[in-house]
Length: 330
Image 1 (cartoon, helix red, strand yellow):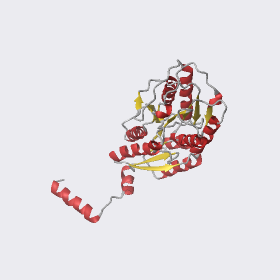
Image 2 (cartoon, one colour):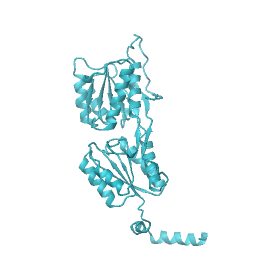
Image 3 (cartoon, helix red, strand yellow):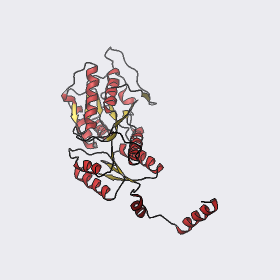
């Protein structure tokens, strides 16, 4: 149309506060331009980053993203996926909750709704996914702890029915075996990715007669509970026991010492997942389902400041202006 006619139409749209009927439009084009996102725990600071990355990519390409929280409950996940199907979303980004039920996921895919999993992949189904390289992150964190002089290293895992928790445990074990340090089952404690489990399991470790010299915590929310246990028991970090964890902890600048973390690029995971999903919807990707692995970053701070190394030398501390270490392949 001519610039003059376009200006008249846009002025009328503004004056009338006109909004097109997207429901009617979707019936005509058989597409709603809506994406669903299913998250297990919106209070976990990692997942809002994932949501933001996905939302930014969706809006850039004309899609609206709607999100729902399952609170790590399988029945709630089934209901949310069913509701998204009923509302004819064009695709779903799914952070699966724990559990072995995948029937609702398979039926959604069979109905023609593409699904991309983020952070976690349900067992027993081939599906597109964008995941962190968890083995690599945990193994390199353990390598760092060993190089810095810590040898009796414990881990507080997430629920081991989740692949992400098993992968982090596998990386922890690989790091110890690489240094020819025996893996002790006594130093492997299973949490649930919630703050209270971090608190209770850290108290268990810290009250032992032979307690570890360092603890690797499998997510930032549990790390908050671990810090509470340290404070309550008067245990000094890192002088008595060091801490490292997956995920930056919200507001961690107020913690002293600041925490060494395996930082997850949540925004990138969400953005790449949404891009893959929209490419599936628009037919730009037709290959079989695949898994994309995103690299973590080890950020070394004061909570793993050096102690006596295996060779007997005192290792230097890390200043509060932390340093980022490149991660090698696992």
